[in-house]
Length: 103
Image (cartoon, rainbow, N blue to C red; front, side):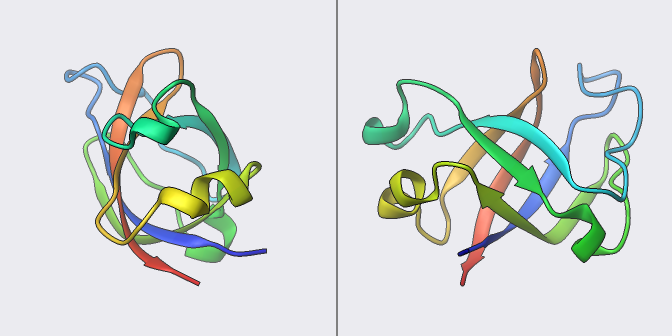
């Protein structure tokens, strides 16, 4: 299964983000691609492979290269490229990601 690697910036609790860190286990959440018309109609389920990343991400922190898989990878990877920006969602926008590598 192909993966993307993304720089993840989580919003702090004050900025409207999570109140607790994303744990160091695989973490699922939907993402929105606002700037790709073909993907902008709905969210896409993903798994942040935090166990492979090797740690957690606290609110307000930036993680440089988090491996991510998509449940609809054929659809997402058809349009996603290095530099693509996406929003992490958990009932509200909790952070922003940028694809830095696809493999």
